[in-house]
Image (cartoon, rainbow, N blue to C red; front, side):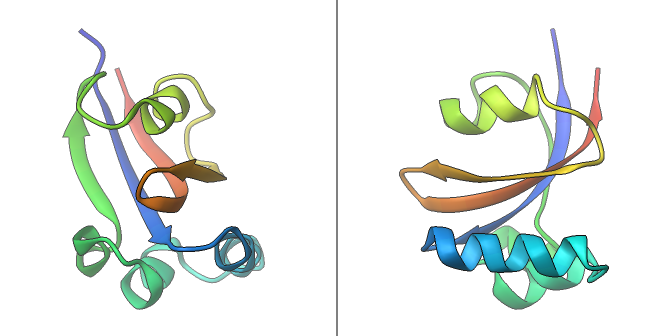
Length: 92
């Protein structure tokens, strides 16, 4: 079965998500941005979600994590929780 590891940043608006993505693309560390801005409890760990299998996350999240390019920041991705930036760190 497929497994992936990822980290994410969760914010309430698309504008906030777009702004943070630009900060990261301009060189600000993803982990530091997650610690400062993410509204998910995982933000305290730099957005680290650990390892998970398909179906453990919401569909919109899974669709990105199990198909998109590794090591790149993806988003904004809208879910029922808000807007996410996702960085896939590993996938098997």
